[in-house]
Every structure is written in structure tokens, then in C-alpha cells.
Length: 171
Image 1 (cartoon, rainbow, N blue to C red):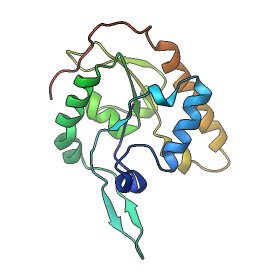
Image 2 (image 1 turned 180 degrees about the vertical axis):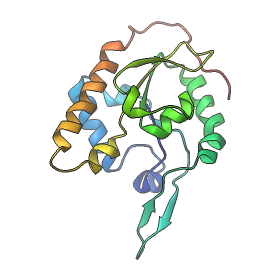
Image 3 (image 1 turned 90 degrees about the vertical axis):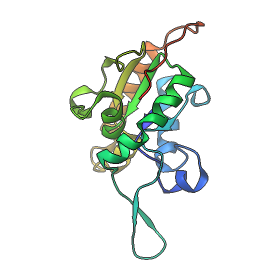
Image 4 (image 1 turned 120 degrees about the vertical axis):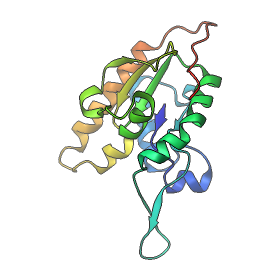
């Protein structure tokens, strides 16, 4: 799974998806039939972009294209080590990193897509779990249900474990 960037909690702990979005992701993975312990999670951008608010709180800022470009070699290196056959793309930033600037999560979510040239992996785009958390309370259950449905597509698309190499092209 590839997300956007670490959040405040993730940045402080040095682990991806351990804050509120991570808790929601864990719950959704379980409902979709995926074991979180078997999922490799990382981010397209490796640092937490933020601005300071009133007090000690650090406020998330969406990464700029230059941050995505600067971090792409690290993401490619990670994926070359992991060699996934399926990558779940969580949100617009991760999608742009792996599929280019024309990626739109609203148009491409819930579909299996070919990976980057030189990769045998498939990609499945969906929302970032933080988008579910930010959804209007009146529609949050529906948004969450769509997120779980997308993850069920990923669960169904998982290949049986084999010793083949998938690989990603170097950035």
C-alpha cells in the first residue's frame, strides 16, 4: 500500500499508518479480508509537510509535485525490494507518484490498473483513509463502505503466493 506522506503521529513514531488514518485502515482491511500484518505500507513522500498552528499542533500540508518527484527514487527502491504483484494506491498523491500527474482518484478508484512500465504489478486505486475521516458525517458511512469495497477488490485480486519476481523500474 502506498499513501501520501506521514501524518503527525506517523512522523513522530517513524512508522506509516499508526495514527487515526492508520486505525481506520486497519479496521477496513479486516473487513475486506486482508491481514494488516501481511500488508507492506509506505508513503510516496517520505517527510511530513506541515505548517504550525496555534500552539504545538502541526497542521498537514499536501505535498507539492516537487516533493513527490524528489521522493520517487526512494519509493521505487522500496517497491523493487518488496516486488509486489499488487499495489493499493491510497489517494491522489500516491496515484500521481505511480501513475503520473493525470491520475485522478475519483475516476480511477476501484479498478485494477497496469503498473508503471517495466513492472508486472497491478495497481488498485482508492481513497486515502484520511479522506474517509474528513468526509461529511452524514455520508461518512457510505464513503467508508466504498473504501472497504475497493479493498475487497484488492483482496480478490491477490495472486496465490509464488516465487516470481515482479519488480518496479528504477526511478
